[in-house]
Length: 346
Ligand code: 13P
Ligand code: SF4
Image 1 (cartoon, rainbow, N blue to C red):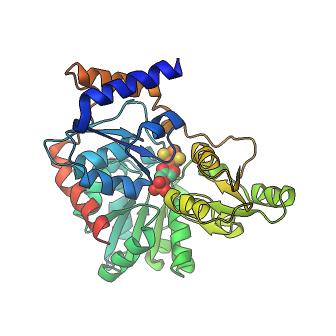
Image 2: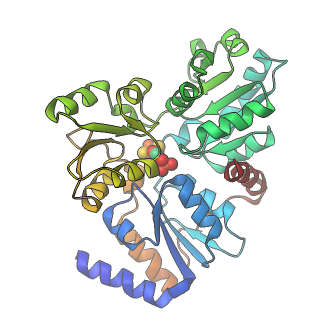
């Protein structure tokens, strides 16, 4: 069945030629990654989308990534997401309407401050547009510290959303760990106006349920079972897990870390399980292990991009039908594009 599907995908790609480019996030399944023209982290994929000149960009990733690709590509290019169910739960934790209401409370708590909102790439286009409208920008896990520096050159405080862990880890990287206020929009007790007034960094209470599951015990256990093991984790992990690890970074940094490892070294990986499996295949000379041994770190949103759907959208294109087109509303496109451009510039 798999061989037949591969044949069908290759046949469709053969027909479509240069009209199609496939971008695949590092967390995609093996069969998607194997058909991708480019595989990378969120930042690299947004750069690839900006540079792509194919008529169709097929995005192996989640909705917010495909939206960003639609914003960044030219108007005559079409972005297709093989499954419309591939929505990152973290992106849904900061809805633009809700942020708009919170913004009124936060700015009222610090009326004399210039607050710059920064949204993680893992957010929808309307929130990216909101951030640009308030003088802010987008960042990914590979440039969050530079986005914070950019913001502090222009304002006094940063509101970072949706991922509190990436926000906290970035604050530590910049030596601003004593400057953090938490903002929990779901809990009246979690919104402390005095704390906002006193702190430079306000963190929205969102998180990734895949990365939050990693615990310090996982790091300890892997080191006990594998003396000499190194640990690399994604900055969406809790602060204490990042502190216990040897290296922290985006999925591209995780890949580079394993590429640079000496043969025979052991590396435990604290991120989504598909990337760990790719790295095991790509670098058999390195002993690559999942940080949580029971392979529980599966992102359901990324998993929605089933190779059968990839086959379907490609064969439909061959038949002249565009399926699962991702189109950002024109009124959001310009401002969200500005937020992304600011990121690409920092
Ligand atoms: P990267 O930008 O590191 O690829 O991460 C994206 C993501 O969704 C992590 O969960
Ligand atoms: Fe979203 Fe987490 Fe999946 Fe990344 S791993 S796409 S942040 S749910």
